[in-house]
Image (cartoon, rainbow, N blue to C red; front, side):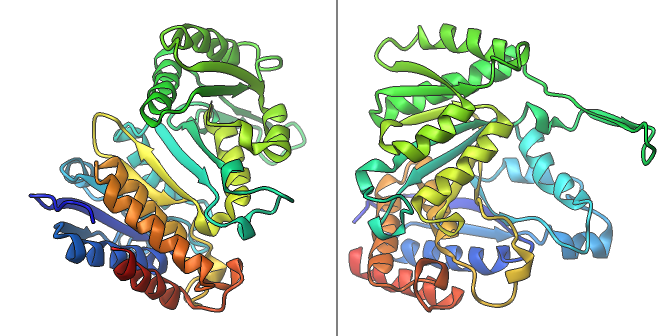
Amino acid sequence: MAAPRSSALSIAVIPGDGIGPEVIREAVGVLKLLGELLGQGFQLTEYPWGADEYLRTGIGLPNGALDELRQQDAILFGAVGDPRIRDMRHGREILMRMRFELDLFVNYRPVKLLDERLCPLKGRGLEDVDFVVVRENTEGLYVGMGGIFKKDTPDEVAIQEDVNTRKGVERVLRYAFDSARAAGRKEVVMSDKSNVLTFGHDLWQRCFQAVAAEYPDIAARHLFVDALAMQMIKDPGQFEVIVTCNMFGDIVTDLGAQLQGGLGVAASGNINPNGVSLFEPIHGSAPKYAGKGVANPLGAVLTAQLMLEHLGLKEAGALIERAVVAAIRAGQTTSDLGGSLSTQAAGAAVRDQLRRVA
């Protein structure tokens, strides 16, 4: 059992849209139980920011929201996305503002297989799927720079800018090497498309060589992103830490999620090493499943685990993982993992297992 912490952790909870409130409710339930079992205080403050609030007020994040979030120890976030707001303007106002203005420049994605039955690859075991993807989170093609000229005419032109800065590239590369060293991992693979994107990804190549030289104890290797995707399927066991740009990271982390059992078990952290960080399951709001009680809460529960580990409560995080593994192996899961439980029942099963392993 992990040692209790003397002071309460202040956690902002933003359930968001779609299945977000359903899965975050189960993650919060796990946190509360863990607090009781370990004597660890959690001060959980829920915020209503999402589609319903936006449609009611026209405001994504109210004045002072970001300053308030900066005072928290961490943020637990569900998802944004609602078919009533087709252009996702509330999502840009909420999630993208938090990413950019809180400078959450690392998207940290552990890809870890918890049960061999969940891996779609033939003959692969737990030792074959256990790596981390570090994705640059505030630059690249997702900065929203560009425009459309002569819209809805035969001569229409759409331009999307790919922004890469030396500061931004170097700091995410350095984070990847630091996290590898801290975890006892021995290699970092950088992936780009510098053979075609000869300006932006030439910067990635030069920065990678310079930063790698600072870490002689960590091997450094390069793969083009198409080769990376192929190798992730062919031999995922070769990887320990992968670092890449915003768009490529978005794609290969979904591929990684399938290797570990699907989006329903995938967690992520949006990290600012010097400030508050935000943690979210990667599955999105999945509005067609909202309110049906079928969403898998394990991604949200494992996101809570990742959050606790980031905050220094590694033993508490390990207890959550043990409880999740026990529930999976007992078949106490939602249908996407072969079980028959509802979202709420699957969350309750994890809490029951947590009482046993603690």
